[in-house]
Image (cartoon, rainbow, N blue to C red; front, side):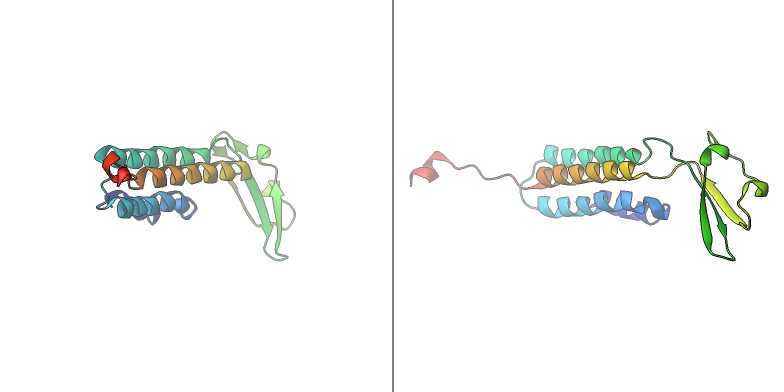
Length: 154
């Protein structure tokens, strides 16, 4: 329960774009805690569920930053037209250098980011989160009672 509360708490103090990274593991911690309550799930399975969620959740987070995908843009607020600019002209490592003379005619708003989340990074992150949710679901399910020989004979 504490891990779920921590994850959901982190979801509301991070950047908006990173909130979704914390919500699924937080929800799964609560689901796992509910499934495990009074079901006879052992300590080792409980620990394994938490470790899988934390470790695989971290992998999902870092999958979003597998490679740097800088993006630059400019906007002409008068016409509402937006332009995608070649980031190679402005982004150099973690440094961004842009001058108003580099912008298209009439553009007064512009910006760059040194990384954006590409479609392939998003799909990888979602896939890893789905695998994590499945693993935690399996680990948190109560064990199936074993049939005893006496019970099967009668």
